[in-house]
Amino acid sequence: MEAQIERDLPADGAGGRPQALSPGLSFTEAVSGSDIPVHYTFIEAVDGLYVPVGLRLPPGEGPFPLVLFASGNGGGGLRLLRWFTNNRSWTQEQFLKAGYAVAWLRYRAEVDYAYDKLGKLVEDRRQGRQLLSRGPLEYEDVISVVEHMKTLPFIDEDSIGYMGSSHGGEMVFKMASEYSGIAAMIASEPACHEFLRLRPDETAGINPETGLLNVERMLMRSPEKVRPRITEEVARERMRTIDTPILVQGRDDDELQGIFRVSYDLLAELGKPAEWASYDHEDHGFVYPERNAAGIYDPNEVARQSVADSIAFFDRHLRQR
Figure 1 (cartoon, rainbow, N blue to C red):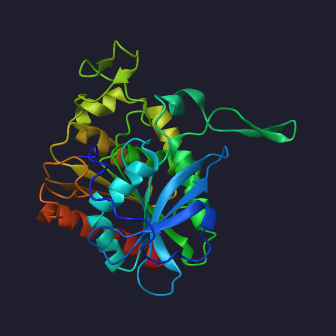
Figure 2: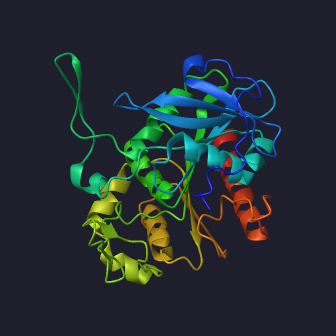
């Protein structure tokens, strides 16, 4: 569980720091069970705040293709980033073996329906300083990270990919709608209800303590149920500008499988460079296997196949350019 953040964190200072990461904003640690350390660094977001990233490099000189990894809602900061790095990095190890640089991301927490209600971020100046039309959102933190990574000499700036699960998968669509600087993206189990402007049914409700929508138990298993509930003209307009290759990954028995499939269907109907794959796995977030109770990685064959498929997708789009 992600709550077990304290488990098996290594001591600071193992390994070397890659060139061009600011010494004042970065440090290096060993990664549990791996010979490849992690270089933690803090990257400036649109509004001048900093978001943490855990970057790892494969053997060799580079420049390397890079895949950024995200899971779920934001928040948690460096502490959660370290937990992911040490306890949900089997997938990263496979990418490292394939010659990719990899990085876990943390970003600011989701703001409920701000993307849908507040529109695009506009920047102006006032009294010589920055003036924003709204606060930056979590997907805009990822764009800031991508732009920073493009400046590093050991990263191939034209070969940067992103893989996001759950809310991190919905962020694929938000980013691709506004930004073309990522070469290819995977949206794994993308919870795109906000992007599609989906009207929830009685399986979602308002949390009486906060007044915010609770979608944790929303049931949207079939495309036939989902399609009439989305605001199709809004979803299509948001997708109209997408030109990034996207692989949408579903999970056969997921409560939101209908949302995953409709997200892909709309891309395909609009002629976008989209692919679909669905997997029969019992766990949400299966593309990022977690250490088991014995503290080891033991992904089943479905998880292994999904990661192999993911690497093959990025090979086609990041290596064959």
